[in-house]
Amino acid sequence: MNAEPNPAHDEFRHEALLYRGLADFVDRTVPFIRGGLEAGESVAVVTSAKHIDALRRELGSDAGVVAFADIAVIGANPARIIPFWQDFIATQDGRPLRGIGEPIWAGRSAAELVECQRHESLLNVAIDTETPIWLLCPYDATCLDPEIIDEARHSHPHVTAGPPATASREPQRKSEVFRGVRASGMPFATPLPDPPSEATVLRFGSGDLAVVRGIVAASAASAGLDAHRADDLVVAAHEIATNSVRHGGGAGVLKVWPEDGQLICDFNDAGHIDDPLADRRQPSSTAAGGRGLWLANQLCDLVQIRSHPSGTQIRLHVRG
Amino acid sequence: MNGDGPGGEKEMSLLRARAAGEQPMAGWMEGEQMYADKQLVIRHTIPTNGLSFAGVIDVNNADAVADALKSQLEGKGDLHLELSRVEFWDVSGIRALVAAAESANSRRRIVLHGMAPLLRKVMTLVGWAELPGLEICNCGEEPG
Image (cartoon, rainbow over all chains, first blue to last red; front, side):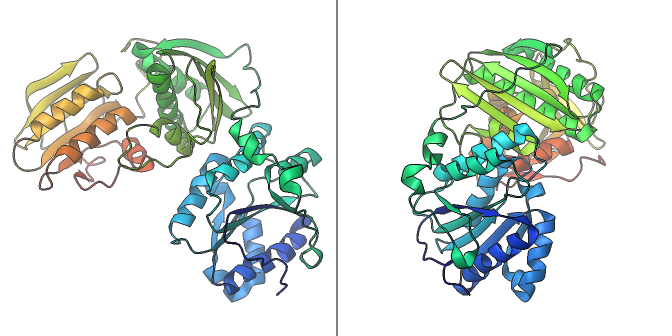
């Protein structure tokens, strides 16, 4: 085992791994995984089914003690990934851990990419600095746009680009380039594209929740959404509208339109969400509020939140 | 609540087990009404120690539902709820149910009957499906 990929880690280390293709992915991640196992650490890997297959083959019997999860299941909606890591951390009683998480792959939509990048920034504040987990986030430099690679450099305190034997770590990144923590402290910065002019528009108040549900259900039916997905969207939309009624000035504006095989519901109200992790804090059984956004993330393929002191915009995406 | 708004007739076809106005599940008889507002009716049931719900439970009547449930938890034995005609039940409504279950003493439970699968899914997703004072009966699909 190469010693280089195994520095002692007694605190949270969030590291981007820039690799080139599948073989390089395996060459670079297997020593990281084996290093963790040899140190007695628990290891979880969340990546594509194809990458998981390749890792299982290379790891052989060691694969049995690694927790694998398909990113398409865990993190199709990237807002579900932080709760996954928090669950993993919670089960391990403070022992050192390693994780591999690959939320970004070629083929992600533009909206998904923006939210994946937000996820990567939020990781820097979602996990306490003293939590002993080393998270490696692989980025395939052969098929991702240079802008995405550049953003990864900005959202990770540590970036590894070279092969393990000659790892060219960039220890000064934190002070020079890294802006992840600051970026996550400036929530919801990237504006969303304008809704199309043909979107259905509804101004709603507290007495109109049934109308909100009705419009979403009817739009889902005409967009050809599967009945279960339509139900998911109706429930999520109702909760977001309820938040507008309760916390967003008592009213809101809903716009609904189909786009690329999805139905999109866009809500605007006068409320302000100042917690950048508001939608991914796992509800405890005793807490009173905060479940609407959580539920929307569990039911929808993507939830985009943009909030400023002057108002909040929440956009739900559900694929047919 | 604006029940005659756009889509009002077809909106809930997928979200409830039965249409409002139908009879409760087999084995249940309805007694006197104990609560009503413009989107929900709650009745006592015979012979079970219970209540039947028909309509919508959301942020507009969640507090009233919580009060109604708590008032029924003063007696003895489990409280049975017949939910097959609940058209829509949102998170604030579920919270009312959970608050009532938590207020009950440890020997009393609230037992849910005829829950639509979607409601059950939502309860699981928000972490409320497994509370000590709450039991979900698997009678949603095949009443009686």
